[in-house]
Length: 464
Ligand SMILES: [Zn+2]
Ligand SMILES: [Zn+2]
Ligand SMILES: [Zn+2]
Ligand SMILES: [Zn+2]
Ligand SMILES: [Zn+2]
Ligand SMILES: [Zn+2]
Image (cartoon, rainbow, N blue to C red; front, side, top):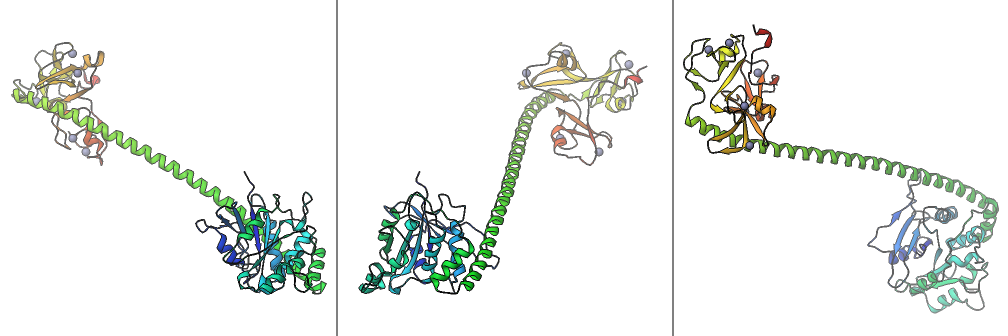
């Protein structure tokens, strides 16, 4: 890949610098400020304007706006140039310096004079190139210049040295890069850019006395005065360097924080997705359960229609109720000993009592079903069901999902009768039951609920 062509533009307010940048920069791309702010509140960003001109290699114009745009001082100009040249963030460095000066002026302005001095004292000749090989003197506003002024700029009038000769007086190469451009035509500049050496400018800040001396000579001022100027410039330069460092640190810090934040957001998003997935799974599972319960209920309803399952032609041996309504329990020891639900609950009898499932036989052991009844959610056909007793269910089970049928038990949440699947009982309210779906919805969440095991027996310690 070709190294980037970064061109530093140096000039003063009103000498065509801004017009040139504005004409060449790629307006579809925003400029990239590379540096922070000065302590005086003046933005001293180094601005990089990418330029793409049809048929020309892409290049960028580097500008230090806000410096010396108004009431330009020598110190400002030196800063402007040094700041960009010593800036470490431009990949490929600075390949050329464009010095703008209006052709109609007929002389080189302060900015151009300062640049000349800095090139002379600070640029390093690399690979045998002249120090001025990377400098292009750009005569602007050529359209406003007459023939004499143009001649004065390029070749000189009446044996006098031309503007470019004065500018390049310390240059050793025969044809230094000097072009005249106008608003309408920048093509001579592109030709000059193509002739720039491939190497970036190497710059070493000249010692304070050397620069003061040279500037005093160039500008024709007192040496003491120029020493003060350079002194203050160096202080300002150091300040800018520190600011740039701080800014870089601040940006790195910010990047770290935003990275951290991104990671947090990603984690949160992942957690949210996980919760959503779980919620979806829960929902699917509930829907599936609801379908199973509905299918079983239909069969139970038809069985109920054929013969009421909660009406038993037997007498309760506790309260003498006849016939027993609701769940009926049978003693496993005493022949023909029955209890109704409320007598069973009050634990009147000391033997193991099992619930009677009227008219239902276990499809495993083929015995009349006593105790806990499990019903297949799949093997159902109109009014016939596939049922297992607790023993057969726990011994061999069944290859389909089975639901426990809590014969005679009503859900106090939704009224489901009988409760299918898991049944929950309130620890505080007497005889308060919920089906698994009502329990999940928290229908009775103000009291503690517990999973109720269908009454199989009274506590063993009560057995005589
Ligand atoms: Zn009774
Ligand atoms: Zn008994
Ligand atoms: Zn069985
Ligand atoms: Zn089945
Ligand atoms: Zn319910
Ligand atoms: Zn309760």
